[in-house]
Amino acid sequence: MSAYDDWLNDLCSEFRGECECLQITPQIATPKGPTTLFAPCQFYVVGSMDPVFQYLLITHNPALPDLERVIEVDVPAYEFMDVLERLKSRPEFRLLKTGHTFVPGSEDAGTLTEFLDRSFSSFLARRWPAVIGARPGIMSRGNVNWVVSLYEIRGKLIDQSSASVAGEIVAELKAAITPQSSVACTPTYPHS
Image 1 (tube, helix red, strand yellow):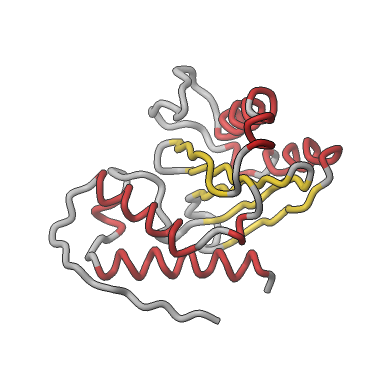
Image 2 (tube, one colour):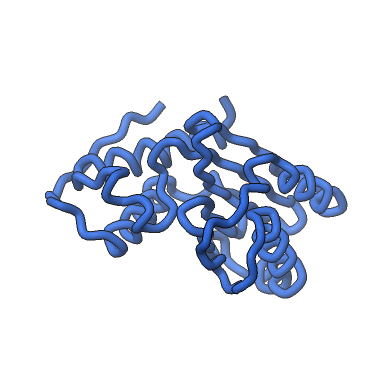
């Protein structure tokens, strides 16, 4: 297991533990809320070392195992586009859009691959200077329905607090839904 595997396991464990304490279930959270870490979810981490940035994608594909992950990090800049092309050619990114608007911004129909094309090209073409100048940390996030969530990270994902990221996702989820009952609790998480 790599440090990325451990980080993703912690993220999922912390999210699911907090949701259990708050009595937020997949049934009341999906599809009303943003992309969650309820099962089945898969992770994709891809990033360049020059400058250091990483993407974290969370998808929901019932045909794939829960917590499956693909990690391509520390890729030289001159190889990064090839890595993206391999990532976008995966079957789960060719799923058709199902009557919802892509976020961020497009009114046209398309696939998840086309969404990733727009997101990655926008990031690389217009935001590269901002990435270089940004402090490490989570920069932004985009959702497509409840199917995929894309995080752009300046620096290394594993340098971020998995508990903080999980807390942000839970907070967004709570804002988007009305839980049937919500109780205050302080979950504890096993750490390896």
